[in-house]
Picture (tube, rainbow, N blue to C red):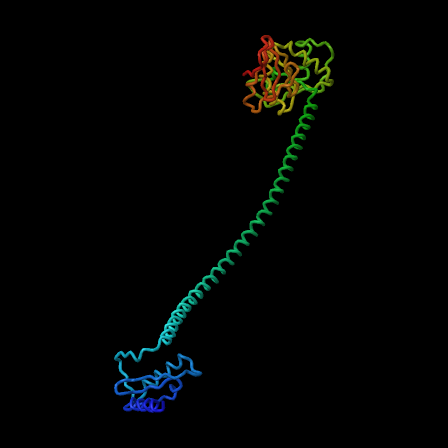
Length: 351
């Protein structure tokens, strides 16, 4: 046993002959580098208190800088780092790539943050504009509501004013008619030459006695001609009677003047005259059909029923009166509904 150990030590000494040990204090804890001729041998030692990466870097640097070491660019399998170092190097490269990606992501995030800030600013501006528009719309709505309310009030006031005006106009017309209630107009009476005086009251009394055969005393307050002088026809004479019954006697006796150039009529305000003028053709047509037609002031009664003129003034002639042998009544539109009672037929509207 002792001999074997001695032999082994002898062989170890023989093997180390001709070798040049390379000492590196920084590498001594983990390895010894031994140069034998042209060959280099690494003797690994246990690692204590040094990280694997630090040990690999320190040993590689000491080996390359050693004056007795043989280093060249020629590939040498003995210079390949161990697998664990290669893994660490790959991991470091992977970390570097990830860091580069993180830098790119950070740049993109910064750009996106700037765009988001700009977008947030624009959104705030749009919200302010929208709020301004909303406020303006609310104010406009309130203003329009107030204006519409005022317009409704004005419309109501206008309608009330028109209604009151119409009522007042009718009252004035009624007063005018009452003031003319005792008057009669005598048409077609020859007029004296210009410059000559004429007694209109005497002319009216002569007509009442001679033409109308009225024997009672007729009292006339005043009588005169009205209107502008006209060479083609004489102006009418208006006579105001002292008593309304005497005026009615004269008016009802006017039929005796049929065929003469003289006629007698009632005096009315201009508006009433225009209304009566529109109703006269209808009354004449009704009388031609042997219907009982009476015109009282501006109201026409046919067979005891009031006649309502059409909506338009031009259509007042388009409202015929029912002929004999038929019962009828005036419709709200001013037309007569003819109902034949002889054949029991259905009623129909005629023109």
